[in-house]
Length: 226
Image 1 (cartoon, rainbow, N blue to C red):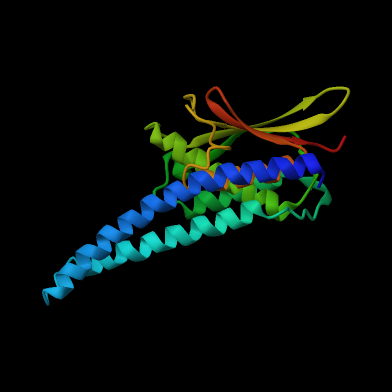
Image 2 (spheres, rainbow, N blue to C red; image 1 turned 180 degrees about the horizontal axis):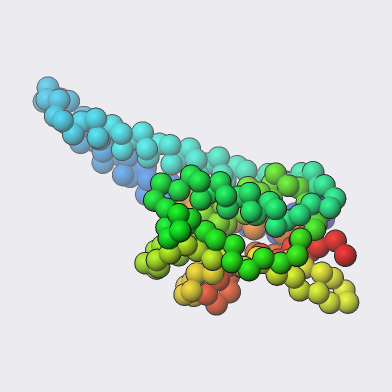
């Protein structure tokens, strides 16, 4: 990693740390309130029906905190890519989408939460298949949540394509949200979901690509093998 890349990673980690610490403080404040409530009830010798619910909230809060800390640690570590030549990015995305559709607890129209509507020719690239699959999964989950937050019905549509020039060939993946997003989910670090999106963007960028918010969709660009 070059000095400029190292400085960029450190700066990004610093920004992430500030936001995550803020989020963790909010979560810990909530845990303190729940713990105080539980202590007072136990001091009275009462064991109400909602006691288990309160304890469950404590455990869930601790789990969220641990998950955020793990993501922060992962984001701050340098990436070690294990690239394989002639890997079809479209097949990786198709596998991710099939698993998400199969795991969906509340399937959308046609029994799917995501559909690949416009398929391009094979998007052949030199990538770390495992890291890329995890990144595309994080982006797909994040896109579905943004899509549903806008009260959109039906499955989220994903378009694939190729942009070619004399200098390079790029594979393009667009998750269509239909409405514009008022912030950059790939660089906001505002909570667990967007920390995952930031980590996904870091993986994409390590492959020489980019992850960005566009007007009405999220876009990933990856360099292809000519």
